[in-house]
Structures are given as structure tokens and as C-alpha cells.
Image (cartoon, rainbow over all chains, first blue to last red):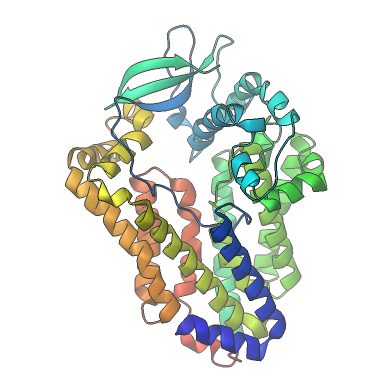
Length: 164
Length: 272
């Protein structure tokens, strides 16, 4: 078996490198066992669970003003739209997490805890900062812009909800 | 005919060139630190690497203002460029790797989300961080890590049981493109995704094939015989990730597919 032979060969030829390999494997094994991230070079397990059918599929987007018209973030060059998508979604998730750390429950599981309060305090600036960020990316949001949760189905807006 | 050492430098230059151009693409897309340096997020999650970064005070220094973040981005690109031209200077590649890791950590820290779209670049560069005498060991290790990572991505899909629900992937596509359909309903991507949504069986089959592709990376842990297939699977997986799921940010991962293309002759004199 290739991986076993590799480890044997590694141990025989370069002990230092063998130790490095073992440390990386142990980190990955710990990550799997503890079911939490402990290395930024982690696995990705997106879309593992079934996605249920919904009445509307939501996307948090900036709205142009009073008219509840979402801003087309897909006009941005390259893959820039992804930040415009992720940032308000993460704002909503983190704001509603214990101490604004979505992984606090996982920290509890290994006997640790994030008790900081400044992360939540900083998040209060999000709406103002997002406008500055959008301008930097090439989208000029009006002073009356709002971050809203739009519910879509087959390319049509079904419902709109304000994001606090 | 190139000797083995020249061959290694060829592969190293090829990888560095791809990484360099991938970063130009990120820069063009507005995904550099100077775009996000002042965000109100400082997300550490449960990842010790991010806590260490936070405690080190490095974010406060590198992301002090727009100028310092821009200088960091320039330095990263410069190090990648210098490693390309001074291919024998290993320390430059290691330094570029450290800057790449810092960029990844700082970007995720300020994005408020630990996205893994850059670890493919780390695996791709890993063989060149070590002495050339260790190239066989390090390239084999990087290849094994790629196999483990993709296999587990498939394994989590298997135990997540998403594939047991026939309409799951159709719903995933609806969810993924919910706003995109609204703005760009006529695009080829929208039309193809919509066709998939309306043909649940096809969408299910597509998802199941992707899971099988990922699971097949276990073969790479047993033998090198399947390497041409694994190379094709990896590239195909990320191409479809981009086209069907609009996740072009993961395209940089394709760079590490070269690990399945390295000829055996390359290791002839280096194999220990």
C-alpha cells in the first residue's frame, strides 16, 4: 500500500521530514476527532447534508433605497461578488452567535470558551463600513441603503426582510 | 534533454507562474487585504492558527491602514515573482509561502469566515519548500495530502447522506443561484442550472458523480496507477464548481493537480 510504504521510506531516509509528516497527520486526525478546525489547511465538506425544498431561497443583499430593489453585485469584476455575498451573511450569523463567535459551542466541547465582548462591539459598525467597502469595490450605495434578506424563487423576489 | 534538477526547476516555475497569475486574478476581483483591511470582523472561530495570529498582534501591524495592507500584497506578489526568477533560492519560496499563509489567515480573519480556497496553493508549493534532495519525499507527501483532503470531502458527503434525497442538489442549485437568477436569468450558467433544477434526476446524478469522484481519491493512497484519472477528476471537479456553482474562487486549487502529473523519471536520481 502506497501510503504505508511511503511512511516506512520516509522514516528510513529522513527522520526530520518523517516527524514533520507525522505532526501534520496528527493535526488532521485531531481535527477529525474533535470535529473542529485546528488548521487553516483543513478539509472542505460543503454541501454534505441534504438541502430541503423551500418556499423561497434567501440571499442577503444591499438594497438600493426605499424601493426594496436589490443591488446587482454580480456586475463586479472577476469573483468580487463573493465578498459582497459573504460579508452581510457572516454579519448576520456572527451577530447572532454567542460572543459573536460562531464556533463557541465547539470551543466549549474542548473545554475552552471565547468570552470577548469587543467582537460584538465592533460589529455595530458593520452597516457603515459595508457602504465604504462597496464603494471601494465599485458599487456606490446611497445613504438610504439597507441590508435586506431577499427571498427568491426561480428568479423572482417572493419576500423581503430587514436585517437589523 | 533536461536533467532532473532542471526538470524540478521547470515544475517549480510552472507552479509559481500559476500562483502569481491567480493572485493577479484575486487582485482584479478585489480580494486582496487592502480591500478588507478595515472590516469590523476579527473572526477566530475555533481554529488555533487564527487565535495565535490574533494574539501575535500581527493583524494590527499589517492591516494598520490601506497603505500597509497594499505594501503587504505587493510584497507577496514580489516574492512569488522573485522565486520564479531566482528559482534555486529556496528561502525566497519559503518566504513567499509564509506570506501566502499570512494572507490567507488575515483575509479570513477580516472576512469573518474561514474559507479554504487557498490551501490548494499551499499543497502545490509545499514540495519546493524543502531541499531538492527531499523533493521525492515532499512531492509525494503533498500528493498524499491532496488525496486525503478530496477523499474526506467525498466521505463527508457520504455520511452526510445528502445523496439520499433526490431533490437535494436541485434545491442546492436554487439556493446557490437564488439572486443570480434574478439578475442574470438569460446567462448560460443560469440556463444550465435551471435545466438541472427542472431535471432532479440529472441533478442528483451530477451530485452523486461528484461524490464518487472525490471518494475515488482513496485510490491515490493505494497506488500511483490512477494518477492521470485523479488529475482529470480534480480539474473537472473545479471547472464544474465554477460553471455550475459559480464558485470560481476555488479554481486556484487546480494548480495542485500537477502533483498527479510528475513523471517517475523526475525522481530517478533523487529517490532516496
